[in-house]
Image (tube, rainbow, N blue to C red; front, side):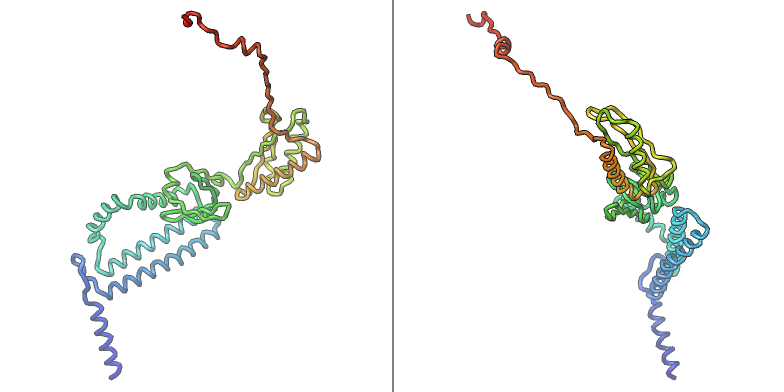
Length: 303
């Protein structure tokens, strides 16, 4: 008897949940269908995260490039979420064809008020397909420079060398000029310009500069660093030290270390880094010169 009463109560609750709450065209939406649709969306979201992690692990084992791996994982995740949304709508009796009219209205709203969101969304898809940048790249776009932490549909996360996180809209990567320092290879060539006093031994200066670069453990040995006499400055011989570095993220610290080494080696070899010099020529004028330069009077104006 108790089981029968419990069954009857559950049946009544289920019938109440299945009563239509509102209608969208020919579809009657009930509380039960809404709850089931919400459950489907929750399963789709969390399931897509799990599947994307599995995809990343499988591609990592096959040594697939990190950019390709992340792009595939994100696409799989988005597709599963969209499919979950379609099933959720279908469960409520709302077909894709019935959403056409609503979609047309949304397109008009997007055209007027959501242009930036749409532009960033499309730009995010382009970034995932073309992969001009990927997670881990060192880039510079506009006044922002740093490492790409994450590429999302609407925006990308950039971490600067000062450990500041900046959210950059994806449209900036499409519309503006972007410098990707780690796209072509994993190393970058750096320049250090230094001037020495006239009369210094040019061959010795070149030797010291190259040795200073090779002394740093993070400077690439091949290709070998090179030092060039770049120009004859106003008060110095200007040299350009060129070297390759593997750790692009620490390039500023590496160049600072090498400059410190150069200063020490110049001191040891008594090579001077001159101060800027200016020659001033002062010409004194005599009273006779000032008198002779006085304007002459026109006699015709006196009459």
